[in-house]
Length: 471
Image 1 (cartoon, rainbow, N blue to C red):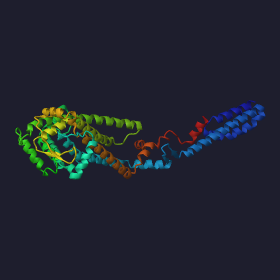
Image 2: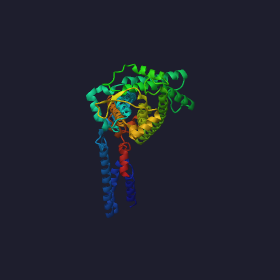
Image 3: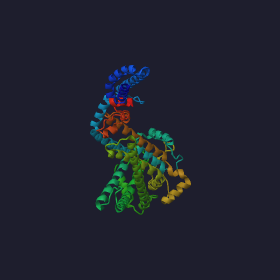
Image 4: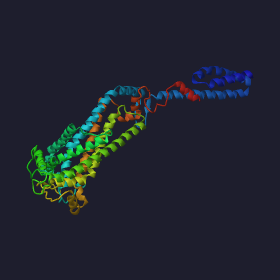
């Protein structure tokens, strides 16, 4: 009886061991089990039957686990993303090898989006600027064009009557004025050593010098900006075509006639420079604040998104540059909306006394002269509020909505196109494949053998599978 008990203990010890030892202990255990009924009688028969059932269950579990390991070669997700394990490994290896090329391509991506944003701001937005300024300076208009739908019929009529180029008038003078502004900033910076750009590390003294530089630059450009405004809003069918350099001649005349205007109701230069510099520098400072806050928020969101994905881009500078583009767009949109009424007042003061004839955007067919007699910025504001109401300060707001809608659409479209080209050239897997299999994490942890989140916690080890089954 003691011998049979020892045999039973040996069998139980072999059963509780791992997969490797269990497979070797099974034949010996079965031989001992065959002799146990003769030693312990009828109760031994029941014990043998129970042990046989346990052994069969263990073997069935091991076979099931081996079948599961075999099926792990193919990963089927609820997104219908199925890639063989070997193909996943090859895709990851190819993805890791192309990381350096991808950084270079992403630089071209950011540069391309920045270039398109610059072109859109200076060229593609010009037709909407023309419509917006024509609405602002027409004080006797019946339609205020506060939303884009009121403006669409007038645009169609202008194109039918004057052609496509009617909305591109004054483009050359606008670009010359912007170039002049940059040139004046550069000259003042070289002569006085004042900074023409600032950042978070700029001292208070240097920041004050920068603001003074901007004030001087805006004041010198105001007469030329007024001359450019005339070329932008005047009707093509009722006015002579201006020359390319006429903006310099007209601007110089307005600057030299400092105290007395050269025409009847035209305001002197000092009456325009004061309000223009005040609004320009305030608008610039507000834009700096909005851009800084937007940039910080977008960078923080980028970091949080990376932490949630469990991966980090190899070159954060590229992503931050992309965030800067949208931060600049947000700052420009916010400042234009808030300072729109002040811009309306300044445009009316700058156009007064120039004998300009503009297109009547109430219908898009006729032309009307601009006849005003404002004494200054405060008088213009009071007169506008009395005769036109609050909506008079926002005439042409629908054109600005169209302008920024087109701006965002162009940037989004360009980013998508360049992204598709970059994806093809860099042999990068599609975005949903990268996101599902978390290839960004694998790119930054090249020593890790993790292919996808579904098998990152699964050890493809037969011994561990067998041991788990025994447990």
